[in-house]
Image 1: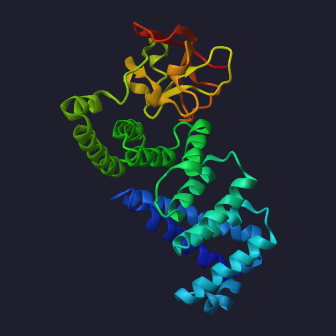
Image 2: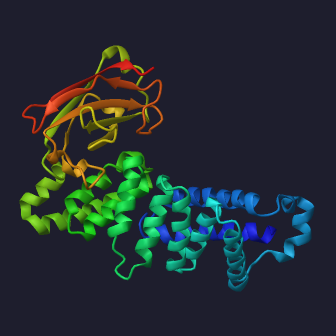
Image 3: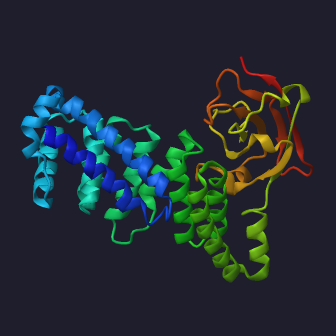
Length: 345
């Protein structure tokens, strides 16, 4: 079973490099971090599924000859993992590890089915939703992000608006769907939150989308790409009380949401910005909606919220800096001012 752990730590690392490298060109540091995280996950799954005692140094030495080195041995180890998770079908990490291993083998239909099992066990876990969506896309003949895969990506963004891989794949969907302006908006929201090498690669994709938009709409379309995707239905100016300015630290994130008054907390539109850039002005439109079934243009009135998050997560937590909500009729003629002047208890 020691071989089992080492084999799948390797496979997990290979999966992230092999599958995501076409999307994150040149982001070597990101690949290394992801590989380490996945290898850690593999060992964690081994602790749940295997024999922890086998990790003892003496045991490792005694079993060193069992570590799979050839493709045939690794394939056999994957089959053993398949048997393990079917014998323990409620082990989410086991299904995830199997899905990644099958993806590394380019057996995308089986990867999709493994991620589907993990999604059934944890249906509201954004990371699982995005991996499942990717596997569905890879298993499809068209390789298009649409249908169930798109629903999963949008669902992940509804639960975690800033999910990086979900935003990346959403941008790919928009390019495939002939909507490069929306791809630009999705990818530009990622730029402040990724490391420089990844941002440089992503900027190249944004420039490609801008060229597509220019071809699609001419000079007017190119200008629209620079200014943002869709015309905003409301403009928001976010200010901060000088007494709180010193509390804002590098890495803090500003979230601006529009939601239904007296409705569910789920935002109808959302924007994420660098909190150190305050004061700033931004627009919210249909392209900022995390859900395809409800957009700003469908509403006559919304409540606007601004919050600075220390954790970088969209969910509110104690210590966040926030503004009092402001209700406004749509479309709004003048910018709505949100003043951040209190600390959340």
